[in-house]
Amino acid sequence: MEIFAKCGMRCDLCLLYRPNVEALDRRVELVDAWKRMFDFQRDPAAILCDGCGCQREDAEYFDKDCRTRACVLEKGYEHCGFCESYPCEIFPAEPSPEEIRRKIEVEKVWRREDEALMEVYHCKMFMDEFREKHHIH
Image (cartoon, rainbow, N blue to C red):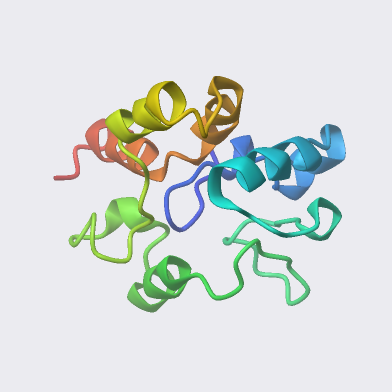
């Protein structure tokens, strides 16, 4: 079952989403990739997310201050895919296919294996597919 984050990321595929961590913890692998790709410096064991749709008071979020989440909640949408302003200036920025290719093939700073881990975080692709499927333009 597809579970969309407020920004359109797929929680059900996310390597930080609590049910996925409990089934197979790949946080160390993901954080290692993020260190190489983005100079990310957080302890993998300290990163866990219940999904930004979680209503529990004790819910854990990857980014407690996510501007996209705040915007979607303020507007009363389930996620960005329903917004008339999609995509907007606060929608998560993602590298283009060309930038990914350059980082892997030319600059050699990303690895194909790292990018494979990142495929589950392609919010725009998921939102574009959602909008197309539901005829939202």
